[in-house]
Image (cartoon, rainbow, N blue to C red; front, top):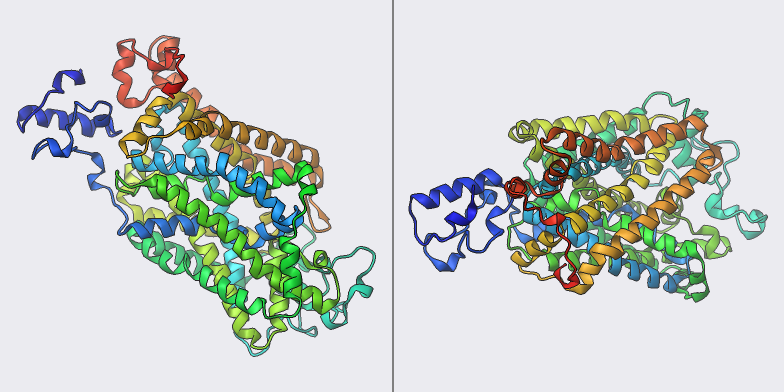
Length: 620
């Protein structure tokens, strides 16, 4: 159709119905390619835009969307990784590279995904009608989100198990002498700096009651000889995993109308608990020593390249770009929602939360150091060792320890649930938008997705399940997610290009030079350098993938790279499929592949804007 021939409509008549049919057929915002096609609502009583979004579900309230995004972005890593990284990499000085990468890469990518989802009102796969050859990126991020759900739900199940175990008069990890303890179990009261010696840190001391409860009582790691000896799933953890999966299912089965209400609890509860834990923490002896260590400024550390790499890694994974979640959440926004303000607000809240959590963590670590007469560096750690060993042990020594343990594990549970909800919503929205039969049967598909993640997660709750979890954590969303977001940034900035900036203007935000530079040059360069570093590190150290002292066999690394490649291969495979599936000369096929679907009639006319060289930089 020649759209220009129907542009001068002034009133409601038969012709207007014809325009509406064209718009519905294209379903990609074609009505906004020219302001003369659809007049603004103020130009006449019948002149409102007829968008295909009218029948799409939207958030009940704006706060539902904001809490969902914040709940997804603020996860366990904000508590168990950032504080330790900050302490290890120069304290307050670490904030310099962290904030820098937030401004030049994290926030632009975060905003880009929100804008893409909101304008196109579709999931991670179908938004690539804007540049069909890159649709494989959508499948890549959907698969990555699914992989992460396999093991992330297990960590939530651990938190739930600890929560149930905390409901006793005396916490089970307080003393030795339990059925799961070894003969070497040592009372923490007898462990001090002189006992440790030889550079052994208390955080690595694996024969305390808390450490043995985690590895022997919960994981049963002592009953496995390695990743080749998994055993059967543990029934206690299986029940916890079932509870987690049911929570996820009933939070998501009705779409954002149901999940938007769940986050009122899951997204706000961690802040209440963190504040309560901080108030309790700063009253403990040694707390100020821990906080001073956390904030100690060492600018010399900035000379170390690893500090900058840690900052780049943390800001990228913390904000959650590339998992398709932000696109999915934003796709349920109204078209004129101010997603620019939302991006600035939610990304800032995420980073401030990370910094704030460090006070609650290091006040307690300072108490632990004081209690055992060691330095902060001897008790400081990250990951599961922090939240399932060191922090619970500190809690067990406090008056009212049962209460504090319950409060702490409720925080971990809520931190994990809403992040897992986001990942599953990305999978569900991405595939239901692409396959209409799934959309018509959303409840059934949501159940199938939840049940599928449950079945795979069973591998991670066996006696050797921690090895499977470590493998997934290493490979499922490492290099692959960096690759996916790099291709996404290139597709949007270099191929969709000026059209993307036009869509932002239509939604009420005109991107300035800063945003255009970041999207087109800085963010892709950031992702490329970080990706190369990730591949280099993984390649050089692939033979020594370890969990504590256990060294993974070589074949497990091959399996890990297979997992990573299984998602990344969607990009080249779909690009080849798309090129071969369209007709025409080589140049015409390329044109169809990189031109938005609603502009394919221009390709037939030989008018392909991507083939035209534009010298004016201000046109970006």
